[in-house]
Length: 365
Ligand SMILES: Cc1ncc(COP(=O)(O)O)c(C=O)c1O
Image (cartoon, rainbow, N blue to C red; front, side, top):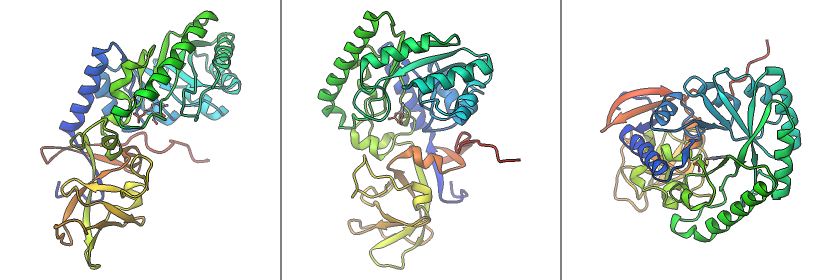
């Protein structure tokens, strides 16, 4: 690793492979379809490993992710409203081998994806998104969901394929999620009954997140789950208890560039390497934690500087020392990097591009 220019994103391959295998065996144990969200790794190489371990398809948030993933995957869910003619056209023109599904919550989105489907001559599956407590997207009323499903069914090239929800509001420690999971499960069960009574049965019920990963089977009716962060994990996932710190596969390799100010050291990883992400949405716990010195956190940052608080540590860093920072929210960190370096037992083994970072937009001619 000594030759890698810092700051750099380093992934411990043994840990990543263990994370992937664990989620796959959980899915198999509970007869759930695993459809990992690629927004965390944005890499077809990693997606191919997820597919090889039994994932039936992948989840994407952006058209670019979907385009890049189409090279390794023929079943793609865009779990993001396909609103706007350009976005709808881009997903509708994915390569023909891709079985495409989109999640949406409005008549406008139905109209736009229907006309993109017609223009592309492609069939598209649709999940109707329900709000089950996060209050981000999704219709809050089941009746509204049923009406959207009927509107989907009225479009010749669209097919109502099921219900989607995202339990992003469940961010308690894993052991404290009982009440919210029960409420969610009850709400979903009732919604499914109402859909069935209305004659629009949902073949697939797609939900799941990394904080709720290991309890997905407790949510009644779920058939498919879409964790993303679990591939690498991060400080927030560990704080929630959905993994241990030793399950954090991704770290930012950084160099100590200054120790001139007493009581602190400065590394070359600031906001442009770590993002300004709090742990679990709360300020005060710094912006990353050192792998080798867990008592040390990144207390402050500029764009290219991260200030380490040494007040609780006996460690005396020297300029030129290298450290590895466990990020608070790994998805943002990945997105800030072009390349990921894969290491095994401390030795550099491979590297791969973060191929789906950015938007893949074309400049004007
Ligand atoms: C719609 C949707 N599904 C799945 C996920 C994956 O969640 P997590 O990163 O907690 O695994 C996300 C994350 O943002 C999401 O927005």
